[in-house]
Every structure is written in structure tokens, then in C-alpha cells.
Image (cartoon, rainbow, N blue to C red; front, side, top):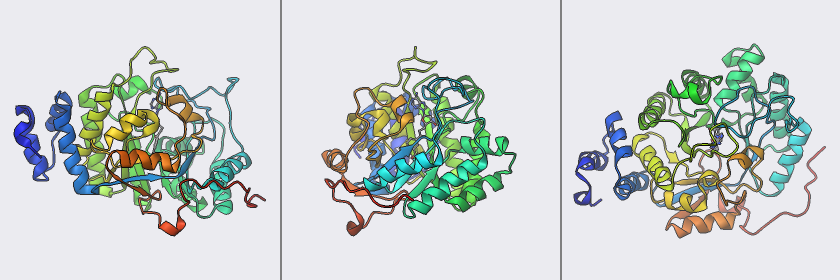
Length: 383
Ligand code: V47
């Protein structure tokens, strides 16, 4: 790194990064406050290459949003509907299995399953969903339910945290996605999602899930009303828990999309802000192995550039992203990306594409579908 070109306010931080020293809260604030995007990118890229070399990971997955009914009323969400709304839906377990069957035929080996906080669905719906999916597709990884959904289940079904977590694992849960973290700190969290699981509880449940041996992800929703200090505090709270559990596989900064939400008057984050946020996340989260540039929200172009600003993962190909994704798709973005499309993006950034499973194991060559292959014959798996 050519630290001599760095602005004065970043020189001491650059030296710490070079020496592999942990950055402080104040360092995080200085990084966000700096206008020198290229210096931030160079530092984050240094750490990215130290941790993941030139590799960039992606997987073949499908999002399954079993319901859009939600009692949480989050100001940033354009996806949810109240229970009696004409556009409210909930899919039966059979419908979910049908959708999974199509995804399986198209090569997906991960289902990313999340939904709204439904006031009436009972625990046996969630366990049957997992066990039926596992029965039909034993080699499909089920990455399901955020900490917010788990918290909702404990309350609505009057079960302990352990009963919920162990019950879901017994039914087939393999890992959990990182949603629902939003901004962990108060008072911002209450301003954007007053009725949601608290930040403290989100962390507590993550710790308990890690304690049961499962990996999870973590997210941060940025570019709305939060301050730079909120972001740094959020990242450091995740870092502290990760020191304890090592359970987070990946961190995903989620760019806020204002359309269709109660915060539609806000502009959302700029491209510069998104790249800075990815870079600072890479620099502060020195103990989280992967940083995801979620192309769906960032748009393909910014996601590609992010591979030089700290990110080493693009998430999935996504043949059909599900209904939640439609609500936050980047402007002008398509809702799917083929394997060759994602590999071209990665190679275009001078990186090496690695198709991975959910737990970041590379998929052996003999188990990969060739990029162009589409299975057109229905598989006789449903009974
Ligand atoms: O928790 C909701 C966010 C999350 C909006 O774990 C919005 O691999 C932007 O967590 N604009 C769900 N974001 C998505 C999510 C996720 C995505 C991809 C990969 C993984 C993973 C997790 O989406 C919610 C919320 O933070 N969200 N509304 C919006 N208007």
C-alpha cells in the first residue's frame, strides 16, 4: 500500500491496517468521515486480499418468502402487508415444496427462507416446512429464519429460545440468514422499527444459535436516518460477539431502498457511500471471514467495483428472488443472474470466481452444473 499518498487523517489508521492491528471506534468514525474513497478502498483491499486472496465467492440459491404478512410495521420495509390486506399472502408447505422443486431442478442447493412476522402461523408450520423440504431435497441447505423470526416464534408459540432453536434444527435448519439486524443501537433502531426485536435480543439469539453449533450471517441496513456513529457502533457490537462465538460467516451491508416505504422521502445511499460502507466494514470486522456485496440491492456495477473495495462474495445467482427481493431490487437491476453472468462480473474485476456452498466450501468441479446447463426435464421428486 502506498501510504505516503494517504491524507494525514488516515496515515495512522493505514499503519495499523498494515500491521494487522485492530481498529477502534474513533478509527471507524474517521474512516467514514474521510472523503478519500481511494485510500479507504486500498486499505480494505489489502485486508480483503490478506483474508481471501483473489477469490470471490458466489452460490446458486433461491429465496423463498413464505409470507408477507407482518405485525412489525417497520418504516423501512415495502414488503410487508397487514393480515387482511388484499395483497397479503401465505404459502402452504406444499406450495413452498413446489417452488423448491423448480429451484432444485435449476441447480439451487441453498434455500434462503424468510418471511414476515405472521400473527397466526404456529410452530408446526415452521417445522413441517423444514422437514418436508429436507425430505424432498436432502442435499438442499436450508438457511432459514432471522433472529427476529426466532424471537417472534418464542413469543407467539410460548416456547423457550432453546425449544425454538433445537426444534428447528431437528426439523432440518442448517444455518440462519443475517436479516433483522438493521441498526442495532438506540434510539435509531426504535425510530425505524419500533416494534421489532431489540438489538440486544438480536445479538442474544445469534449467540444462542451459534452455541447450538449453527453458523449465521449478519447485516446492517444503511443509508436512511442513521448516523456514522450508529454504523460504527453496529459493526463493533457484531465484532464483540464474533470474538466470543466465531459464528458469523459473512457480513452484508444492505443499501436502503426508499421506494414504497414510509421513508420514501429519503434519497437512499449514494454509490460512494455504499463503497465506503463496504470498505469500512471490511476494515472494522477483522474477525468476520467474508463481506458480501449483495448485487441485488447494490446493482451489478457497484457490486463489481466493491470486489476491489473489501468485498469477496456476491451472494447468489438467484433464478427468482422471491417477493421480498422484488421490494428492494436496485433500480434497473434484473432479478436474476446466471452462473456465467456472475462469473463474468467477477472475472471483470480481476478476481477468481469460486462457486461455494452456504458454508463457504468450494463446490467440487464434478458437482457443479456447467454455467449454461438448464435442466428441462421435471424431476420425479414430488410425492
Ligand atoms: O432484514 C428490508 C432489509 C433484510 C429494505 O444472510 C431492506 O446471506 C433495503 O437480510 N431496502 C432482508 N433493505 C435481506 C437479508 C439478506 C439478504 C441477502 C443475503 C442475506 C444473507 C440476508 O432486508 C431485512 C432488512 O434489513 N430490507 N427493506 C429496503 N427497503
